[in-house]
Image (cartoon, chains in turn yellow, green):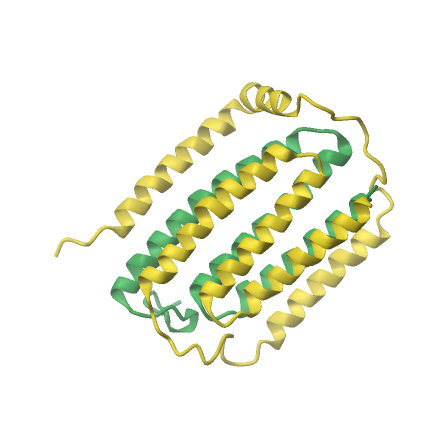
Length: 165
Length: 100
């Protein structure tokens, strides 16, 4: 049952990811990316991280993809998009990526140390423990992340301004 | 019960697809979207390991990755808007202002 759900969401995510890379129109890519993110958030729910699934949908689908769609429509560059891929032979890059993938798959398959079952039982109180860990043990990274977000906010505003000429 | 290796294999497949997109696509926007795909595949790994080892640190790292991704996308799209204002193209191989 659980494996069936996992396979459904995994196949959906992989198909949507292929759609992102292969689509001709960037808008179609963005919509495929949205489908991929929703499938991945379903997988987060299966991993008993419902908070992260919700954050995934809020941040990725709600903010990042809307930003992508806005920019895609705002830039409005009508390249004929006859060529989706870089000119020249991409065999080297594709071969390298395929090699990387095969290597990682072999390592995962050969690996004997991956647990088959869950170590403990994380039932309930997930958000409370997460918050305690985040604000007690990871306070400094949290503050750094907030500063980074602030810098990114200011930087995006400065970058998108019209240059005074 | 889904074994951990399935999740890792899913992460590997998504990572490879995203890396291929970053390397061979010609449109800058699609390259950025493929980058999102890469970060998300890493997130799957973090959360899967966190679940199977009953450790919260993986989830914390996933939250940080999501935050950094938001910052990255905001900056990248700002740079893109500034770039297109100077040179009206989105093709990766035509953006050669810095002689790269």
